[in-house]
Length: 408
Ligand code: AMP
Ligand code: MG
Image (cartoon, rainbow, N blue to C red; front, side, top):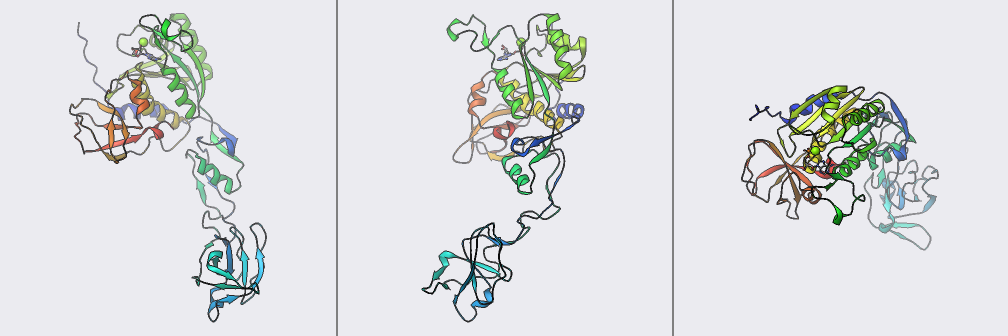
C-alpha cells in the first residue's frame, strides 16, 4: 500500500510556526550576578555612574604636564599616587609618581611609563622619551558613560557581560524565569547505561543516549529539567505521566516515536489530552517532528535517531526555548568557510553536515553522515548548513555554524 506523500515543510516555515507559539514566559527573577551566566536579561541595564569614574593611569610611571618638559628633561617628584587613593593637584614643574589605576592629578596631561624614565640621585626623574598629551591616560567614562545602556533586555549573559554588570555596581540581575521542561524518552528497545552491562544486552536493545544530550543541552539553555526517563509502554500510564507533567512544566519534550506508523503511546496520548501536529520537515538528518500542547504545556516530539534528534533540537527546540526566555538572538551567526571535501550527491532536503575546522582554515567532513552515527556529532565542531539540491565541490564556500555556539 502506498501512502500519499505529505509535502515536506521547509525548516524556516517550521521554525516560524513554532516560534509563533512561544510567548515569552511571564515573571522576572532577580539572581546574584555570580549566578547570571547564560541567563537572559529581562530589563535594560542602565549605568548610574561612568566607568572609569575618574581619569586614571594605564601604567606604572610618572604623571606630568607635557608643557613642563619644554626646557628640561628632568622634573622633581612632588607626590605619590597609588590606586585607590586620592591625588592632589599637580604642582607646576613637577611629576607625580603614579601606579596603574591611580587617579590622574589635576593638571597632569600624560603618564610616562617608568621604563622610559631614569631616577636621578636627587630622586628627580629624567624623561627619556617625551610623551604626547594624553599618553597612557584612561579617560573617565571611556568604558561606560553615565546613563548608558550597558546591556539590553533579551541579551544572553556571558562571563564578560556579568563582569560588565558588576563594574557598574550590580550585585543582582533581573533575568527571565527558567523554563521548566519535562523530558521523556520513548522506545521499548531502550536501556539505561548502568542497568544492563554491555555484554548482557539482549538482541535489539540499545542504550538510551538521547537522554544524555537532551538533558545536557536543556541545562545549558537554563532550563529546569524533570526527567521522566523511559515512558512505560502502556497507554494509561503514558497519559497519566503527560497529564502530570503538563501541570508544572512549560514544555514537554520527548524523543522517539514520531515517525509515520510508529508503535508508540505518546502521540495518541497527546492527541487525547490536547493537540498534536505532525510535521515532515525538509531537513536531513531530521524530518519527522511533532508539536502541540498538553494542557498548559507546550509539547515537542523529536525523532529517535540520535543525530536527527540532536540536530532537530539545535535548529528548532533551542530557538524555541530562547524565545520563551525573551532572548533576541535565537540562532548563531553562520560564517563562510571553504569545504575541503566533496559532496557530490545533492539531497532534496536541506542538510546539516557534521564537519570540523582544520588548521588550513577549511572544513573536513565526517565520512559517515548517517542519522544514527553519534560519533559524527561528537567529532564535529560544527555543521555545514547546505541548501536543498546543492552539491559541494572541494574549495566551495559553504555556510558553517559552530557547534560550540549552537550548544551554548
Ligand atoms: P523512532 O523515532 O522511535 O522510530 O526511533 C528511530 C531510531 O532511533 C531507532 O533506531 C531507535 O532505536 C533509535 N532511538 C530512539 N530513541 C532513542 C534514544 N533515546 N537513544 C538512542 N537511540 C534512540
Ligand atoms: Mg521508537
